[in-house]
Amino acid sequence: MLGVVVSDSFGIAMLYIGALLLGIGFSGSTLLPPVVIREVFGGRDYATIHIEQWPIQ
Image (cartoon, rainbow, N blue to C red; front, top):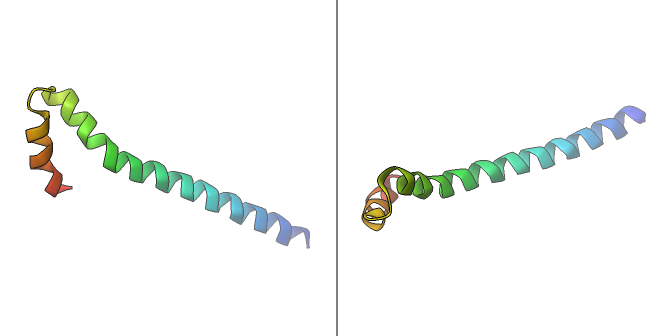
């Protein structure tokens, strides 16, 4: 019985850890490209560059 309780709590913890990693990965893939574009190319042509790279994502 103790093994089932430990296994269940481990499974729940892994579920939450997986959800956290998925959220971090998804937010990074959607938020980082515009930030990197602005850092590399500057703010002057940011809108034009962002529009051009958007369909590639």
